[in-house]
Figure 1 (cartoon, each protein chain N blue to C red):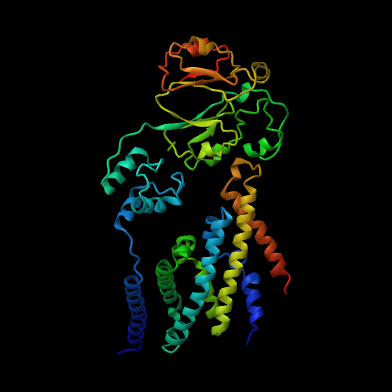
Figure 2: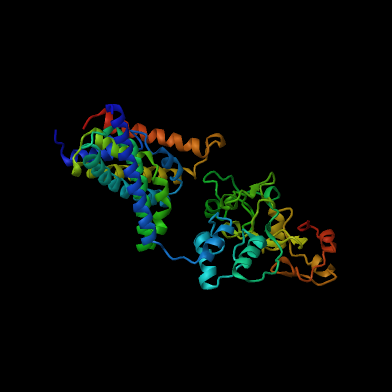
Length: 194
Length: 266
């Protein structure tokens, strides 16, 4: 069944939002959202890596694993490919665009083992997307990630001015915020089908 | 050969081949895209504290290391690492360093609970916010507001607000980075060396009467200390006593004579 690209895009950004509906990549969600600047840097790196990972894993899956009927090896080979790919990108960026490396490079190693990136490529395989659909889903998942990261970090920045009981200061408060955000997202994009 | 064995060998071959190909590609890439860096930079980074606080004035520890090697930034530039780190950097760069005395932030206000509140403040718990509301709730517009802007500025948890509503410094945690001093909106904090024993704990330039109305320990500019100091180390300008630490011998006469107990020995 062919799905419209727009539907896939919206699905990636909102309905299947990785952070708040699928709960993937939560490590960076609570770890890097202390201020907007680093959250934006991390999110930019994730968009980039997700798009690349979707491309590369599609190639590996269709041209190596399917012809040899070794599709059960998808998970482990994707891990290898993504990790190597991120490393390669880091080398290239460091050599050619030092300015970008400084703002984005420190987040790249964090992403190599990010389960959200692995989630994108696994979902691509499960949904049997073709090449263009896979890439679109990868990019849209990254954009969804970005939106939630920015929202979360902005709220956390603001909430540092609020008087909170010392028992919930810091991470507990972050989880409370995440709960509210998640509730809003689930009600809006999941319970009410669009 | 049974099908299971073939299957096993095939899957091992594919995964192994994939791993090998990826590994070779990475080796090639790391050669091809190698960035030439001065090995001294890496060495200096490894001896720096690595907290990236920016107290040296550069964008983080790696930037500081690069400037030291390439642009002759001072090797004593890292206030956090202090003398130990400066010595190690000196060893790497082949330079000698003289030991400087450690200095800590000092709170030049003893107001706190001794200072009258003009109104009750409810709002953001931050000195800068308090100050925006007609110069703060304290009767004295010069003093410490005790809302902990410096405490939050400290990346090392070396400051805390004590029972007297004034910030206290934990010398074992303090690294003399000076971030608290720059964060204070009222300039109440300043560096003081360990050997400097006598301090005026007031920054108010108000006239004596005005100070007495709001604060029981503020400097009223009575000049008793100036007259009694055997070394002429104290001068009173604009109703505030200032100690010249170079001349001060820590005899303690001023501490005894001060009618407001503003001058303190520690």
